[in-house]
Length: 208
Length: 277
Image 1 (cartoon, chains in turn brown, blue):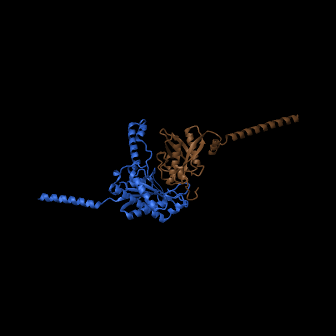
Image 2: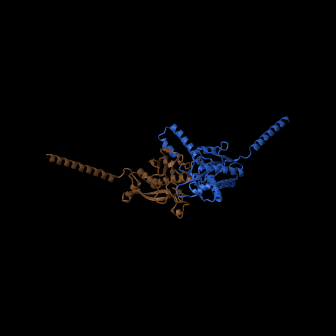
Image 3: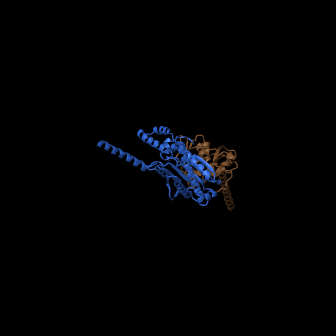
């Protein structure tokens, strides 16, 4: 009788252990397959390389001679809607260049929201870091603003003008120079041709 | 006879009055506004070793004032004379009323440039640029459908006034580019650093100014070499001298082209508007 009870107990214990193991295995497998719920640029790149649908973007960063913008072609994840695609490209711009080009947007800046007006003005609301962490200088402001404006207008045919807001507000300038009260149109004068960059050497070690 | 004498006295009195008035007023002095960028809580860019843009440009502005007063019989107005902040709109208002309520003849704004990445050095001169300007008719068309008529008229008037203020710089397209190229050439002749750019740009200060105006970036504060250079008296003196020479060159050109020196009367109505950007 006692041994029968013991046998029953052991079988029950065994069954519970197996169930627990199965549950743990299922949870671990789900975690492994789903990954982080927050999108990261690195993940998109792995997905892009593994043959997922991609969007061929032309991003504009600071040129190596410090006097204009230069193009970098990049495959970014393709998104379902135009606005999501716009945010995807902006995230890539904020992430920064892959090669020797220079970032134009502080890396802690974020896009709060984006929306397209009926007159094809893209309104981009950035976080305050775009302004508070900006290095200043007229050239610095020109490169920041036109890297955003030209990237948007060159990648999205429905975008003709870009209006920049900071935390939902219109601003006069980023750092006291460029007039940001009204939207900007594309200005390709600030884009440097690759032939103009050949042989250009920085005068000293670039600062971080 | 008596009436003839009275008439003669009256005529002589009038002539004497006119003569005294003319000699008292004299030809009107040229008025030049010098704007030292930033100030107070707005430091502008800061060099790797802490040199602040607001301090450098105020120093150069004061030196430029001294150079102009030495060489020309002009009135010089500084928008900022010390360590305090002046909003951009106030600077524009000061310039637009500097000559007894009328616009000054020129404005020169002094700045020091900066950017991320490779360390470069050089100077730039910017002037006002055309930008996308709202098409009034388009706005009226959009707004008119939903706005009550009286309100619509008031808003239309507001929009027209706004467009006029925003477009003041367009009256001076030719003067802007001439002043910029004159100063650019003078700086190139004096400075060891290269001329990187003389070009139009959409700059807040320049919008709404009713006179030829430029922003001069006298070097790059973001590089160590640039910061060192901008901290020396010798360089600041050279900048001031060169800009002064550029102003003289501009005035000579205007004299040659229009037959009178800018500032004796407002030149805007006589200048041909040329779209140069």
